[in-house]
Length: 410
Image 1 (cartoon, one colour):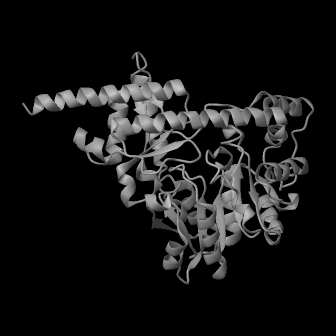
Image 2 (image 1 turned 180 degrees about the vertical axis):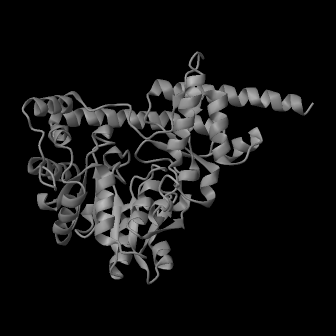
Image 3 (image 1 turned 30 degrees about the horizontal axis):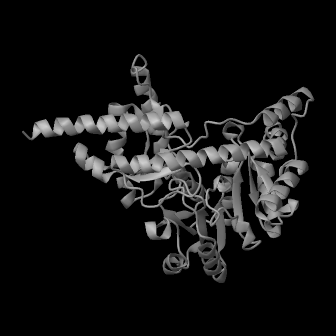
């Protein structure tokens, strides 16, 4: 008798490894080997703020537990929390989003799953930019759809254009899944370009889904606008993880048209019952004036880190085709450095950098096909001191290698 499961579902086999986590695992193994080194591993590979939830948020969670507010909520979330999210849209973006259209979820991941299950049939195709966040396309795949990655360029800020959507649309196309600001590039879609894309999609009876989990972390007034200002039929996915610094609390939300509220609620009731009650009570404190002031101070710090690190990378020989206008990433072409080191592609470069400089970064393999093999993603969610140390280490590693190369050619 053989042991184990003899057949694995095709949908599971279509899910590729999340390479950022594979790299993280290797980085931890190397870090253990380097534990006595004067240079501990610097982790610039994970997109997680080094800030945690502010005091008022932590206090609200403690008070909720003490008061016994730990039982199920309705599947769409606590009404007072939904009301505060609605008020945030009004005060921050000048957009009126009725509370009834906001569904609180177990992180942005649950929001994406709910949207995909509600709207994607087997065989449907969803257009997405290449590069883009890998998990988003896997949510499409899990709903029996197919993510179609369309090549993008620096000219379009690594975002889709209306012309690209029109050219790629087929009878199987169901819609688009965008992200603004984007992971891994940190670039946003210009509001005019987004409007044009949505018009193309709507004309064909399709759906526009947009991942806005980095929306609060915009650094350029030209961008930083929610897509919900364009049309009530746009579906927005958001999260408390990034701007609100609550990654491990696993709380997000979904904004849907009125026609989808009951459908999404029904699916959420069956799949999730409700989001974490404690996290919901805590998140209400995110919108207190003192908390917002702290988040804005932190946003300015993220911008300062970007303003330091992008020029530093360019001085080292990385090419940054588009300066990120939001989030906390640097999408850097490392092809000049791989050539200098005599290696091929960003995957090998990431492991060389781990070995030579004790710095973990994410190779482009996760984020799409083709051109991504020349890119690595740096996370600038780390402290300024760590970013400065990373710059110094890379400078030394490149300089030392240059000397070795010169001797080799004598």
